[in-house]
Length: 182
Figure 1: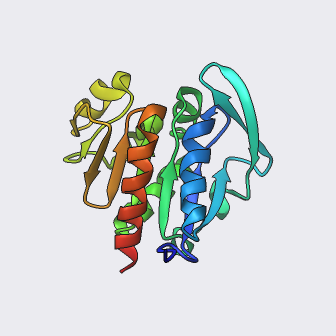
Figure 2: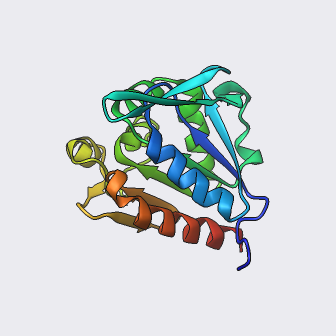
Figure 3: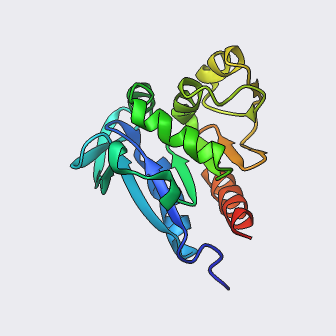
């Protein structure tokens, strides 16, 4: 099978408290298709993952938000985790990064609580999306059309609700990211 994402550069934006499986599962799927993934965070040091409420593994941050140039990336992945999502949306450079990716027409894949960053960046109005159910009101109040489905594709955006949706999320993320390269 051809690696449809060979040499694609994918930014993964996280801070401490990200849901580990929501980073590792999509990252592994992307890398299996030949993509290069880059963890981008607030500071260049290990970023703490979580398995729900328990500490999990850390991942190395390869770039900080201020260093990440959206022009060097083909797509962005936003894992969830309530702690991660609540903090990352407060970083102006993270908001600027996702805005620039969106304005350039590059794909965005978001799962669980990751949608908070897109809300704070002012990007969800008119979008059909899903998320962890507790974000439904936030997304609706920001102008999104929230639905309770395992995966939603709206143009070049892919969204999912939770870790249990990862097989569908990964499948659609890979498809949308590959189509964007054609």
